[in-house]
Image 1 (spheres, rainbow, N blue to C red):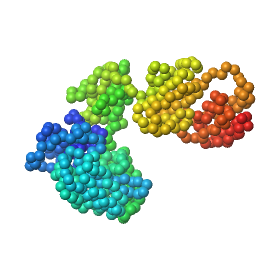
Image 2 (image 1 turned 180 degrees about the vertical axis):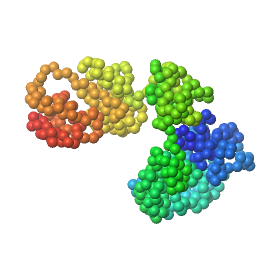
Image 3 (image 1 turned 120 degrees about the vertical axis):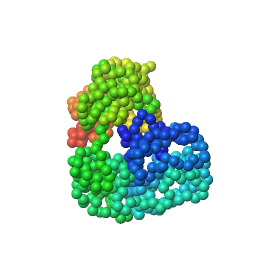
Image 4 (image 1 turned 90 degrees about the vertical axis):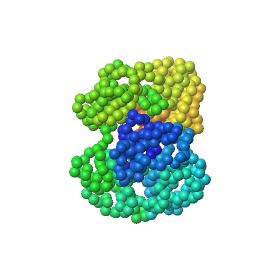
Length: 510
């Protein structure tokens, strides 16, 4: 098999990018698997560990297979480990238009050249795909009506690719079909794959009494819709149940029920960067490094490939390391290595997603606000450039409460005085208004509005908030810094009468 489930994270992992130091399980029968191959004679793949496979698992094959004589040459997509690869599987999704099934046709980039085609036929859907169409795989979706589909082959198709398909007429199981509800669309859960407490699943059945059984009351079971004679239930498993209730739920869902998987994280320090493999990098700081778990477990810290250097006594929810050392380390939970991290005395500087250039220096939004607070009124009025690498961040950035164009990747402010740039939880920068030399005659005319304006600022919602009521300041009063600042804020709905009265007072003064 080309992919498996990481035992620590429950995420699908390609064999081409899997680590030999981690533990993996079969995505169908959930039995232990090992990594094999990797040479020019045999591509890198997962195989069931000896004596661990479920005999009924569709991914289990005998160890002695006749050699076809065709030498396999690694393709670019298999070397890079494309994250879009998935084996042939059935998916379910609950959309606004109703329930839909989807058949995933695996990618054909590494299956050689073939001139035939693969055809998928379902309710009001007919798709004919060649090797070119299937280079990166295809998801064929159709409405849930009869729950049937067929996969046929026309012409010459690679035997390697055919081994990944479920050819012929296919349909949902007559009794009960379970799909993962934590993702959209969710993959079908096989009959030998266990469920964990805390999971959520879609249950498709023709039995309307499914939700009226005693076990349904122990879970969050809701009937979401009915289509084509199929009843779609959303089932949320509880985090904790007694042994007797777990057995009752297991018989109801026809799957084994396993305890909730422990969640483990490093609490005392924050990662400052990530390696190219996605491993977090933590700085070596004075004090202890704390590892926490959401339930009592056996916690151990060991070097990658080495023996344990620190362990928590008995069952514990915290492991404190008083003198952390530089290197690559692993956190083991109940003997299983599930968390890999790096400790460095001089870690690489974390690159902020949004940078503010003030003079010759560049800062993130929080550091830029600190610099502006320390600078004087005149020192903070120079031109500034705000830039970001991911283009999608433009949707998050607002200048003076107004969104930017989605195609921009930088923003130049020649006169930033009084401007506000907000980017949600990534930070906010507010430039001070230029100081007033003297109180002008128009300002004296607006003095009676200042007490109410100060009170409104004190009860306003946090800067950058998208909810609440906005206040319209007449353009004639926009030159006044205090009143202009009101247009950047929002207020709770309950203050609508006071805001309406203040707007009337400003229109009269204008």
